[in-house]
Image 1 (cartoon, one colour):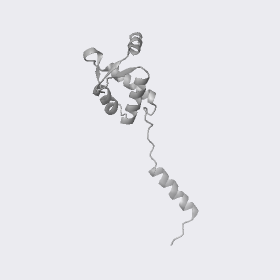
Image 2 (image 1 turned 90 degrees about the horizontal axis):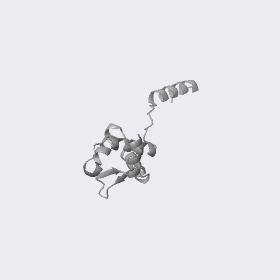
Image 3 (image 1 turned 120 degrees about the vertical axis):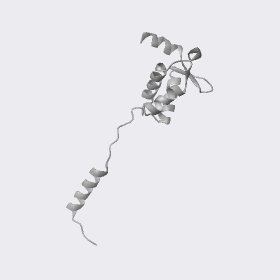
Length: 109
């Protein structure tokens, strides 16, 4: 076996760390509050159909594919939006609707 001196090991380790480390940008929807606000923003931009209903695919599609959110972030954000009283989801899960609280706030925006 060959002996490698400590300095060569340090040089190799530094080179290995520099070449193999890749930094990723933190996802902006890791905070469920940010995800919920983005979902409300997307729902606000969507065209409602009968009785103010918004098809769920007009909310989850842009969140997942255009904004780059994950299904887990979508679920956490939607749950918080519903718990906060911003959105109301039909039992079937096919539509969401703005609550009266959200509608009164939207008028002031």
